[in-house]
Length: 394
Image (tube, rainbow, N blue to C red; front, top):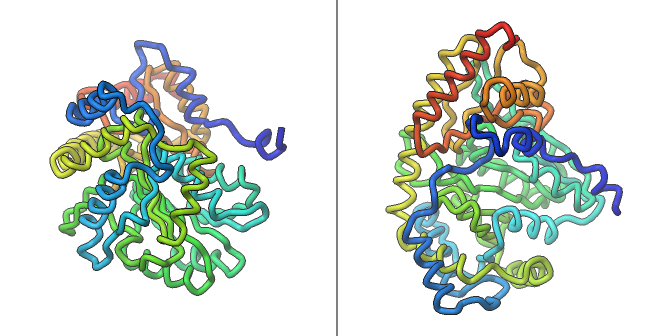
């Protein structure tokens, strides 16, 4: 086996979850998914597809109808900025994770330099290492209120003509930090000058809660880029349509790259399942009914959880503008993995350790607030409060 694979760290999120899965007394908030099922219309479309016998391969790049629908959907979100997305730029993948690794395979050779903005979902830093790349990380920094910010000059200084790829996730998992259009334009201009590709993980773009903008999505590189820029955007149906288990995502590519990505999909998964693609078509047909309802509920969840956490003595956090997480730390606890394991064992509370996302996130915890029942969030905070106030909590 390759030494690179042997050297990969196991997911610390899974390590905590494995310690608590199967226990009925644990409130699980460790994974990045809602506990609400996929909407009926989406499930019904997939059932109808299966019942009609659509159990065969599709085109490597996905059903033409779905590629058209994704292009129209993306144009609806980003077209107001003057940048329509055409179907010849769309590749349907078997999940957002698959979209990302296919993009890495298309762009990164062994020995290439890759820069990533961290903390970030661990797959985004593991994948370039799997490809044999040399990884450099530029950390976000928390302010006094617990909100994470980008040092833009530091990022630009880290990207040189030797940098093959920049990986950036906004809205960010786990911090909720979100790029502005001004920052995206500056990053894009710099990467044009250095010849650096950008891989933008924008799967949380619809989970955006700012009141000072009429947009239906977070700022996207698609808003400032041209179709032939060295930009690949990774997307997923998981978050905005409650479709995590469906394993369906897509890439938005320069048009000259799409055919070659289709070849990679053939050698990875061949194609996404047709019944899942039919479900995605139904989701997109009702996107402006389904997604605003989901986002409104998630915002209510965030606005319930964060003030409760802020009221717990020793907790530092802030309400993030995007994503589905509260990222917080508790004074006096430096080892987030140990803390998360203790909370599972002693408080019945399942959270993700910050150490899973980057060294600079050590001491922090991620709480997924995507809960159908907000009472579970209140109960979870009470468990945290009770555990911290008990002698055993210290």
